[in-house]
Length: 617
Image 1: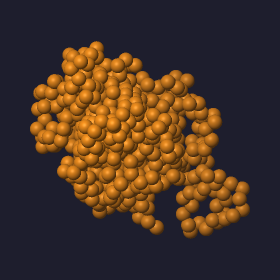
Image 2: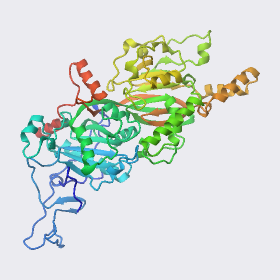
Image 3: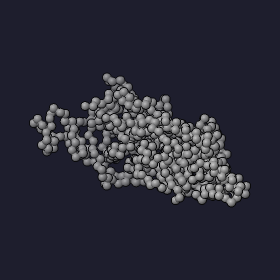
Image 4: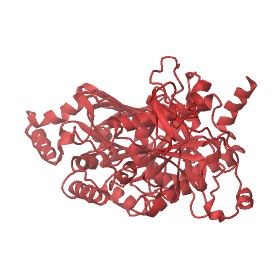
């Protein structure tokens, strides 16, 4: 028999199979906070489902199971048996002061191929459900997000816990304190007994991703697709990927401390889980929905090989899209880059390796190609304008328009540079590092003429990841780009702060074709200039293809039409907050508390409200 590691407690409490048909369930809220617009009434769980019957004992030397005539040898432990897909325990145990049913359920969805494939050891553990001795009230489940069956088992278990929570069938959360922990310590040292942070004790469903930034959004999309109530869930992560912006902004670091995720007797895994349960604070995070659209002559698709299955993108846990799709919708939690990072990343995707170090080398190689041999196209040749709430608020004139002295200026704010990269930030993080480009900037307002509306600094507020706004900045040239990488960030071309919804509108394909067709002009001078310019163009610019990076994943849009940004939800995350480190999201949350003179944090317990309603009925 496989023995459990020293620091784990295998959970053998009875569980109920989640019924596969959900015809009796109404639609549930897809969005968190005030974004929910539908209701859910899960099918009640009967007392028979909740409390499995105890097998009848016989006075003979055999144990009779139901009315079955088959017998079991008493020399073997009749701990459990399975009938009709349900697990029945041979003995019904009551909760005690030291052990009982878990009150918090932690689900970890692992991408085993992310980064250095550190997650492989997690999904090949011979145990899947367990409880740490340090936190017996927390049940941990590990699921492989790339395995269809295992992924769905995780979703079904979340739905089961959610249904039990809605009907008050989970043990109540009992508030812990450090003094209580010290007073109850007897033969064991206090280090053996963990104390959950105050924030952790306000939710009974915790969902973590174990992978890169793409895996984070894969897990979120998974919950949304199956209508899990996001208001009942805490999100966090274990970083395995290359950039891991989400993990860093939460304060959990760019990667795990030890490449061996398990360690001796699961010591490393225990420490990772313990840190997030003991040293965390709740913080809100906006999730944005991005809609990328092309003209009928073009397409929207992911960059890189079509058939690759390495868990690098959300699409791998969703239905496949058609070859020439003119629209793609995905979610964003971190930031988007239009231009430099997109162009470099498109080549990177074609050669993405199987480990973190190799990926860095590939990305560096692709970057050097653009820096030394290629020329990044001006975004003003692609982008036409910005709109917010359906009204144009920022115009992007072409280089030729800016040189035309007879041009009638628009009545809008105007970009007066020709940037090569556009950064749209939800979190103050970029390039896999905690870089606060927006907050550290002292100059750069000259990048926009006639500032008004979202481009006017008078209307700006401090950058936060929970304010329903996105910060937009531009990088004019490679010199500017390299200076930012080298920590010279006093000058940042801040374009504006945009509310939801807003849209980036691109030029019509006909405008691009006029430039391309100049090589066939009847004018010799025009033709020579066009041919010289054509030699400096990359194939993406010649074919009117815009490349985009969104949360570490890369996309190509041929004949782009628009990119729409809508705040989709606001989720609760667990970020680090102790004497050693404070995650940026936690700082944003605490700053919001100071500004509003109250904490817009999770209620004392979302489960308590449900349980009180249950008691009233």
